[in-house]
Length: 414
Image 1 (cartoon, rainbow, N blue to C red):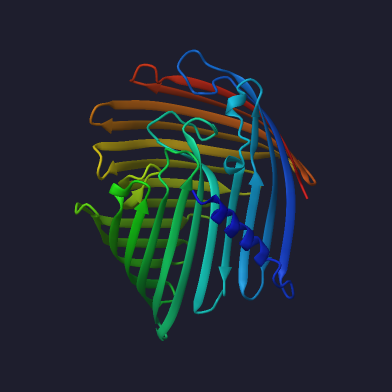
Image 2: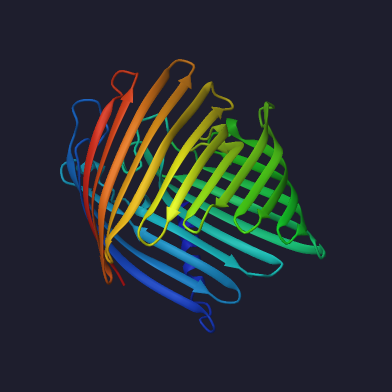
């Protein structure tokens, strides 16, 4: 795992901010977050629960830079966690504690652009195993994702352009269960501006995927036709249709029709409704190629006195070379209400039904999660008191669990 390469790229992006400050907008904001958490079921087990107190210390910085040639944002922090009793679970290894979301776009507004991205995050390894989005140690790995995207746009006619580009996409995982991978993609697109509100495009892409699991390396070709349409001032429609062909190095193959439909409708100034459906190939952390289908309907409401959203979703993951299929559907909702100018109460809830089907075992799970928090802000200081509860009911013996978490967090922003 080439962490030195990752750190070098992140450092290089940082240094770019200071190459030329003349005529540039630069902001630098350090911060320090300290939190305490009580968790009554640290390892999400059915019986013999282990409780513990967890101290979190997270120093971080946020950098923004903007001039004629470069737009860049870097958010970087070190997320340390120390456990009172389960000290073996401490998150204090430098490779594990880094968190980053860095982007840099060179030559903004010019025919040739170069985009760089580095994301360091903590991700679930296997969705079918026990996991929770708020749990940092169960079924999780730190992921380093580097993306480099050069692109050149040639204006053939006033309403027709040719776009040639490519993407280098690399994933490195600290946990050995993750399969480090690289993908090199080249693509060419024709973009036709039919009107001020309508854009039509066609795209061909060729990609080479390599990973630690040599038997899962392949070449992929994508053929796509798409349309973006604005209807009046309230509705935006994006649609894509296409075909993907995958050829593995061992001479086996797979193919799929790809679809993308995204509709956003502004019902009124505070209310937005969005509908989304997609079907495409993707790769899991463990290196498996999957055909993913996702659908959702979301309604959001936002004004000064109340913010809320609700979403119904469904997703299906079909493993191409393994006899396995994952499916989940559910409902989630969130609500935020200001109690005063510097005090906000938040509430969220989610119900999910998940089914994991494999050749030698099937499992059905019902999950229900609720959470609430009280957030306070005073000048550069913020504080939050939170509570979260999850119940996980499985038809496989030993996979049930429930979990209560109480958190208290304070942060100083400079």
